[in-house]
Amino acid sequence: MRKKIVAGNWKMHKNATQTAELLNELKAQVSTKNNAQVIVAPTFVNLALATSLLEGTSIQVSAQNMHQAASGAYTGEITADMLKSVGVNTVILGHSERRAIFHETDALIASKVDAALQNDMTVIFCFGEELKDRQSKNHFNIVENQLKDGLFHLQAKDWEKIVLAYEPVWAIGTGETASPEQAQEMHEFIRETVRKAYGSDIAEDVSILYGGSVKPDNAKEIFSKPDVDGGLIGGAALNSKDFLAIVNAI
Image (cartoon, rainbow, N blue to C red; front, side, top):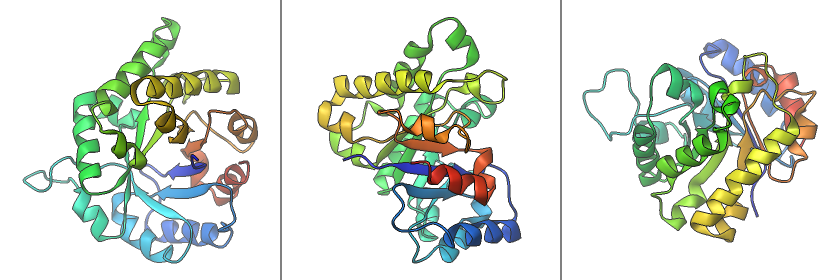
């Protein structure tokens, strides 16, 4: 049975003091009885602090990115082994900002997925179409190709460590709005695409998160859709009240 997950991607926000404040607020209120697995993804420099503060709680810590190589002359980069050495066993890969701003290709992201899995890490794999793709009605093709190019080289057993996160890039900070029905339509398509490639068991077991500006006032309706298994939360994850409201919406 697939997991319900709410993951907070903090992006380039929160220094060490602010990180500790937010994590202490969350751990005081996130119960082991929550219906959703709660994940937080602080910046690299605060990951060790996060794992230390959250030790013994049900909240998991994720990195926002990692390099595909095991080591080497890659100034400023972080390896899977480095993440695991500070207690981080989950990583976000293929985020829309990594694709758009840092020009990460499907092939590069696929190699990062491989490196993470080789180190027994869980991958939150991000993908989704831009506004021009939605307007040209090419959105299903874009999503299918990102899935195929990034993940469909994997063995069936590898999917135990994969969480999918659909990001409708066109509905994030553009003034456009994605409806819960549009979210469900795409999530259903994603699950069917996985089913065709790997069968019903894997398709039904994989969690598909929605990453399109989830907020306290729309979370419950979005999460009520049958193929939406939680959310990858951006701005609302930086405020404990808003983030907890989203967690409690499942």
